[in-house]
Image (tube, rainbow, N blue to C red):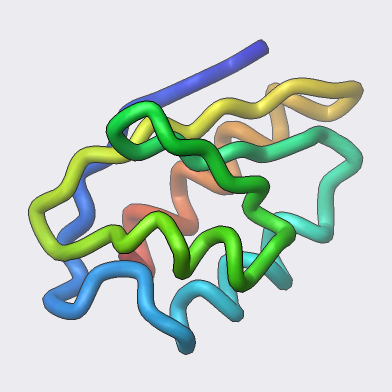
Length: 85
């Protein structure tokens, strides 16, 4: 399992549009990608679960990646967060 922490910089956090883009990105990988905020977890492929975390600008999330392609998935999802969130 790979994981990294990330502080959300998008001024409106993970709302509908970026959550939808994140879901599409996460579905590219075989690995399971989970976003954790304050102990609450949501799979990155589930839009409503992601939005239910209520992630706002300045919040720190942990991203857990586990599976066959976890090295690639972790690296590319981290880049996605840096470029979009």
